[in-house]
Every structure is written in structure tokens, then in C-alpha cells.
Image (cartoon, rainbow, N blue to C red):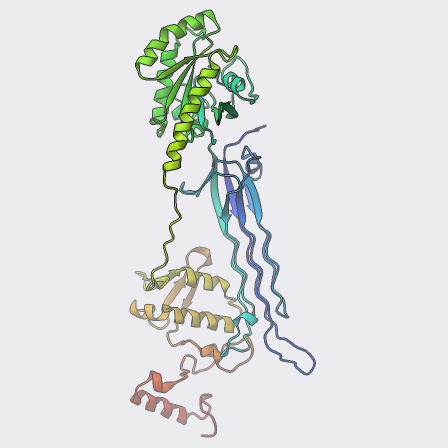
Length: 490
């Protein structure tokens, strides 16, 4: 069974918001005391938080589907529904979050850093929250928004100052065990190290971390062996230490050739060419190992590298190696301290940004997209005619109706709001005007959908029609005594 996982796919589903409540306050001698429906509760978020006690993504490997709780429905007497509980999940330091397209959403470095992987839906307003001076007793409420659903990839990149790289059985695990308190598995066969190991090293006043990366072989950058799976763990290292086996019994290997092969694989992987290198010639406690180290050290120093002869088994040369690594870390930290810290850039929406787009399709239909229209559609209860009228008024006030006119839409034109399965398609009626839902009628009904004069209601004809149109309008009204817009007798 796997004990270390550094790459997983997370299916995060945030909680949905609760629906608003439709309620009318009633008490003795006050049967209709006004709307008192509460709002629905917010859905819970999916939150990732950096925890130093977590070192692997194993929990997500076993349970990749995570879901937060939904918000509760609103109640009467102005009682709001309970909010959904956030699902907070710990991740290791150095976790990178990517979306389904591979775009980096967050690089989580630092204890306690939080990232909302999926946002919970907002709760719907109750009819008390929808009441206004013109709409005193709404017979509808808004539905809660659905929680966000996302498929994310979590990758762990070890946060270490120094990365130990080299062939299998070169002595990397023995070295990290000798210079730190780490207790990696050590044995004399290829790929003993199956997971990266971290150790803390103290050299004078400098403390730094060292990562033992699983052994690389030729072709590792193309997926051979274990190298490709763990090369990401050296990306954050300030310096790399080549651990070269000077006591190998394989006749076709020598330290210089091993060094060239590993460097070639690092160049194929990319992004590591500028990192400082230190070379550690290991196993000099063996007679053949000492002779080999004396022979190859001048060759490697001639290339400009700093070379140390060490023995992880007998601790030869480890103090010098530790202080050399500490000097590189000190220089790197001074450079990092002078760099300008990254800033969060806020880009406000332009003042003239309508927040939606209207597209005229080739087949004569029209598509409306935008955060507000799509969200309003999701909040609407299409089983309530008054709620549909409220949606129409909101779209008209936003300017959707004017934009449809500009695009050439006519009465009965097919209009689609949104995309995919959640889209709403309807035949557009251009005569609906904002505020028409205030016509007197049965609670929960919209007179615009029932009256034979649907869409013809004009609150102030003088402001909206010229003299000829006003004359024609009132002549039509006088001829029909049943017109509800005429008060009194004919």
C-alpha cells in the first residue's frame, strides 16, 4: 500500500445555498402583518490549509471526492437558514494547486496559508428581503445558488534548501542520515529510496533543510525509473549536491560519467541550469573509492565545480560539506531578502462595463451571457409567475432588453440565457417593462402573463409617449369599459 503520494486529482464540490422563505407574519388582529420570510444559509466552502504536520497527499489519494454541506432553508419570522459548514483540509507545505487545464491557481508555501478550492453558493433572499416601497408583499423568494464544483490537481513540491541528486545507491540516503536526524530506509540495491526524505541540518548559526531525491537513471526525464515522478522536488532547492559513487563495482560506470548523465537529465527537465552545484565524492573510506576520488577531483574542479571528498559511513568530510552548503544558503537568503515581494493586483471592472454580452446567432436566436443574468436565472423559481416577472424586470433594468433591440431581436425571438444544461430558453416579449409586476393580482401571480393587455401597462404615459400615441392609447381604453387601467365608469 502506498505511504507517500505527491500528486492527486481532487474533485471538490462546495455546498449549495439554501432557498429563501416565503412567509407572511400573522398574529391576533393582524392576519396580514407583512412579509417575514428569512434568507437561506450560505453553502460551505472547500478550503485547503498548509499544515506542517502533513507530509503527503495520501488522504486525497484514498478519498478524492470531497463535498461541503449545504446551507439550510430560510424560515418565517425573519429567521435565516443555518450556513453550511466549511470543509477544511490540511495539505503539505509546498503544495501546488492547478485547474483542469493545468493553470496554476495557488502555490501554498507557509504555515497556515489558506486557499478556497471551491466557493459555497449564496443563500437566496426571502420575501422579507425582497420587499420595497413598491413591492410591499412579495409572493416569491429567490433560490439558493449552487455550490462551485471543480476538478483540481494537487502537486507536492518539497520545500528544501538543498537537493541531493545522484544515481541509485550512490549514498544519498546514508548522507542525509549522517548529517541530520532523518531516518531513511537504507539498503544496497537500486531504488531503495522510493519517496523523498527531508532532513534538517545545523551548520554554525545556519539551519537549512536537505531533500534526498530518489535515484535518477538515464531517461528519467522521459519517464524511466523514478526520476520523472520526483524531479519536481528539486525545483524549489537553492542548490544541488551531486552525490557521486566512487566505490561502485559496476565496470561501465565512473563518477564523471555519472555526473554528465545526471546533468543531461536535469537539462531535459528544464529550469535547474542556474542552480549552484556542489559535488560530493562519496565512499572515500574504501581504498578503491579514495583512489577514484583523487583521480576525478581535478577533472571536476577544472570545470569550475566545488568538490568535496566524503564518506557518509565514516563521516569523513561532512563538516566541510555542511558549511559549504550553509554558505550558499546564506547568500541565497540575502538575495531573496532584497527582492520585491509579490503583490496582489486588483483590476476593478470598468464603469461602463455592462456585465453581460448579447450574441446574435446565425439561426436567428440570441444568447445572453454574463455573471449577473446567469446568476439571476439560477435564483429564479420558474414555478412562480411573480418570480418570473421579477427576473424580467431585473434583466430590463440591467439593459438586456435594449441590447436585444440593438442586435435585431423581435417579438417571439428565441433568447437563451446561460450555457449548457443550466441555460434557460424562452420566447422574448419586448413589451415587458420594469415595475409591471406591481399590478394588482393574486399573490404569487403576475398579471402580465394573464391579462389580454399583457405588456401594455404604462405607468406614466405622458413621459413615455408622444401626443398622437397618447390620444390613440386613451381612445382605445375608452372604447373598452373592461380595461383595468380605467378607474370609474365609462
